[in-house]
Length: 590
Image 1 (cartoon, rainbow, N blue to C red):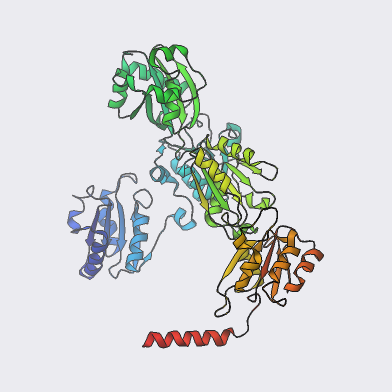
Image 2 (cartoon, rainbow, N blue to C red):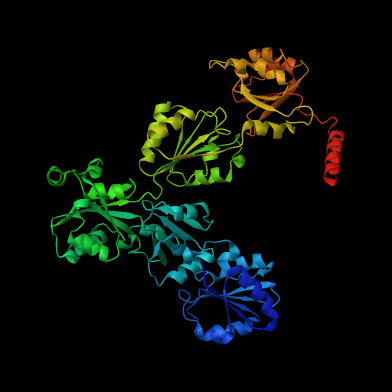
């Protein structure tokens, strides 16, 4: 929680100060105390004239990275103005929060906020990255907020890079590490790099480099390897010079538990690094590129460095295999922050605009998109990121689909399994979830708009009508897959509800025969083909004509059949609603 000082410059601002005090639990200061307490608070809120605020803080201002946030509120509480440390110190955020609570207007002058651009100078604090000190920072920011051509090079995947990808402005071009080169850099006026690797050594354009802490270093150590600082120095030099990795990207070290008291381990802990320990059995269970029979004889596992790095990275990707020194070995893995994850996403009825915000965000971030190609338009996947694998499952067996998803999952990837409509309605996800459960794979379901909802919208019909029908039945006809005896269509039809029948155009003769056992033959019907797709077609009629409508128009399985008097029903509704609401108002007044 921020520590906030509140200064009421005039008597008129006292009530505003009291309100802010109640909201922020701040401390009231006299103006004369500001200089002495300048570094005791995260933020100062002046209530009064801007000129007095500026004259008070002017002698105290040093650097935006160390100065506290300063906000000025007029004595009537109508305007809230960030004065100092807008981004870095959090003055803009504080001003926005105070404006909401006071019912005031926040007057933000920072260009990136006004244009909705990233607060590029605070990405390190927001996402826990290390920012490489650079004299180019202001030049990069100037180019970025000026909407000049800027390159964004992304070498890792974490919350921060997912955010950058999903909110990337048009003047920024995203590159992977593999696509990036010094020759490409000449096309841009500035470069922002988010990577654990050193990619900026020969750049001739302004560059700002962020280093996520996503590397784990597995150590294999000879007994009493010393001097400890020299051993670490050798490893450090190898990381920097040969592997071109940023030491700042190291999150922690890992080794076998029998080495817990080794001098090198103690040295690293004293330097502030965390060191994790694994048993020989844990390490032996990990498959590694370079196992050693000698290591297995000495400590009971064929690998220490590589296996420890992989385990400590949540089974992430090994980017540096075992490297050997005189008294040490090390290997490096890149952390999968959340490990692999599978998101089963409901694609909606077909129109790309009808997928949920969460579903689209998942598609934009996914490393693998596996979509039901026979039912889901490929245009839904057009928002995929550069480098993503996009694959239709139409020609794949269930086993092939699961194997592909597990391959990506084991690499720590985000997988989107894209199903039509909402996955819970005839979505065929049960077998996939059973596979995920068996293999301990993490997954989640993002719901989608079902085609029966699209049918109601396109038919401009309310499927529930007071005192007529209050039930919607979602079902299908009996084809090759048998229906439970109690769910036969003619039994469900007894309720005279609105019925939405999936996957049944091919057996429409049987469907019509069963429905006619209970529905009157004049009951309205609609056959809705490819709902919300560009080639959508809808045919209305009566139940006695349903089979003919489907056959004459050559409709296929991707057709929703809707039956019930709710279709296009407008009669008597005004009178009915009038009576209903009159009754409710009378009850409320009693």
